[in-house]
Image 1 (cartoon, helix red, strand yellow):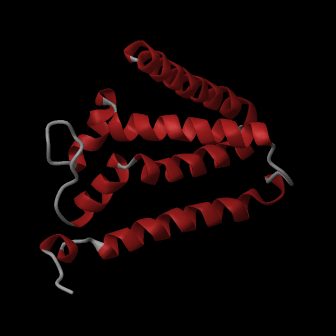
Image 2: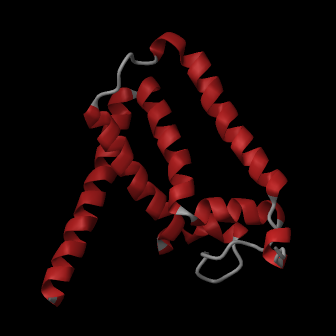
Length: 146
């Protein structure tokens, strides 16, 4: 099987470093939080963090107003196409992929829920409500088109 130029340029060491940083930070938080970790996390919190992570992931990776976040590691005016190699490519792929950045956001919100539960529930409610509104707006537009 032939290897393409794009495959050759994949920044595997940078990917490994990002994965190590993510795993290390999550592991360190888990160890340091110790007894503060809840025995269970309720369905409401899981749903709120999940929906808020979806919305924030889309906001960071796709919305025009957050293109300033993506611009340093992307190569096009819309800040949607990662740079072709190295760290800028690895970070560009992270911040232009709502699924990829969503995992980091979810971990951050979940960790925040342990340390600042009231504030995190409020913030995640705001973003989860906006995600619900997005789906309702999209449904309304779809109904109007049919």
